[in-house]
Every structure is written in structure tokens, then in C-alpha cells.
Length: 229
Image (cartoon, rainbow, N blue to C red):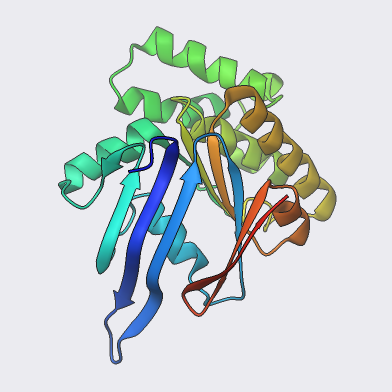
């Protein structure tokens, strides 16, 4: 493990078995240093989301090794993987994945409740995070009372609930209009700089990709480009 690495993949292959076997990733090697903001681009079917799911411990590789913040994921039980995701990784999804019956405050507080935090401490942190994403005035609103951009801000606040060292974003602007998407991108960049988290973003949007210090290009399950700006 490279000392300065937050993410390290060594010879990672992922196969999916069905009527025919599909190999989504072919022996991928990748190192993402701590504090770097990286975009992953490539055509549909190139393996981008598969790669992100493996980094996030949402799936396991068919071969090779994934190491997150110095910890190899291969030997972990399902409970161990859950703890890594809970303590070290924040996820931002294209479709927000907010619980519709909960308020903004409750959605952001939920991961902290699951960690066993006291109600008072949980609500204080949730309010602090919603203020951070400029939604302190929407604490008691439910998702269906918010715009798409506001829902994504709530999702970002929830992802940051434990101030994870690694933030993974899957098409975070893909379900938003261009102006709102630009606002969300600016927010993610600001939080990256302010909190020092490592950020890995899967995107089809060239504006998002070019805003990152480094862009990894995938094609047919292989890394075919690695550009630093």
C-alpha cells in the first residue's frame, strides 16, 4: 500500500455471470492519493460504475485487491465492509436516494442514528451540515417539497455526515439542469477544498470532468487515459 494513497486497486477484475459471462473490468491498477479530486469518464458500458462500486465496497472483485485508506477489503466480512462504508466513505448518487417520508434534517441525521449517536448530538451535526450546503432554512421540508438541486444538496449533506475521508459521486449532476448542475459541482469542489476529502466522481459531463485535477478514462474495462491538470 502506498502511504499517501486513499484508494489503491491492484489487478482488479470483475466478471458478471449470467447466460453469458461479461467481464466489466480487466486487471485494473489505480492509485488515488489522499486529498485528490478525480473524475472517471468513458462511454456507457466501459466499467465506470462497476469501478466505483468496487472502490465503495458495494461489490467485491472477481480477482485482484482493493485497498481503502490502508485497509484491504478482500478479507472483510459483510459486517466489516459495512463498517468501512459507514466510517470512511460518503456516497452521492444521481437520483438522490432520500427517504420521502423524512424531513431534510431526518434524512441527514439517519446515518448518525445508525452509528448510535445521541439524538441531541445527531441533530446538531445534521443542522450544521445543512447549513454547510446552504439549506439551513429547509430543515423541516420533505424531499417532494424541494427542487432537484436542493435534494442533491441534502444528499451531499447526508454523505458528509461523518466527514468521511473518501467521497464517491456517481453522476452527481446527471439528473439536474445545467445551471443547477454547475451549482452542485461548485459546492462539491468547495467542500473538497474545505474538508480535504478525497473525491472520486463518475461522470459523462465534460464540465465536471475538466473541473477535477485528474481524469481517468475507461474503455472496455481498461484504463486507457490518465490526465492530470
